[in-house]
Length: 213
Image 1 (cartoon, rainbow, N blue to C red):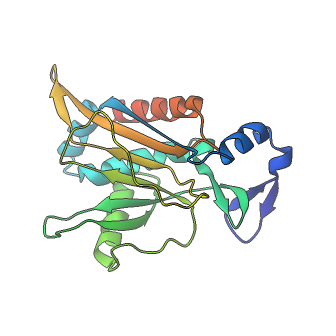
Image 2: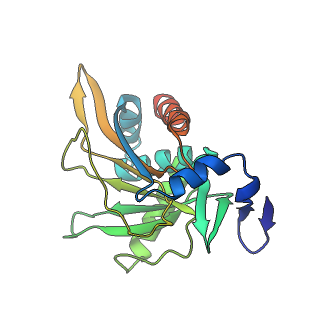
């Protein structure tokens, strides 16, 4: 691997990478993306958010992006025909305020704490005028909330770009079961970089974070 001095990422020498065989196997597939949906118990997290009077949507974006940043596989991307590993990630998320008819895509830096992130994200929401701002790179994860329906499975749109490797983290409408608050949670990633074991690492981090809040 060699460091790209002009950006916060490392260029991967794929032919000398320990993931070389898996990378090329999935790179040649028509659609290398995987999507899974599972149930997530957010009882402690939801109660904390409401107690602190925070935005549930922004809190979920933070929790999701924070845990994604901690998993190396979730930071690999295609950039200018090369494979790179980003050192850090930003957030992009769908957001619909009560006065809006349609949602917008908001970009906000990922901060060290939940409260700092929500403050920063609210500033981005107020300042951003574009509905779909053009990203400057791929050093982000995309979060999509659908608070209108609780689902057991969902498919997300495809960009048509064979080099799209940005993870999509999404969730639906929460519901109660046996006095617990449950939410359907979805992961969509590119199999060139992310395997089932990486899903396991991410989910364990997310579960631990929301349970300890």
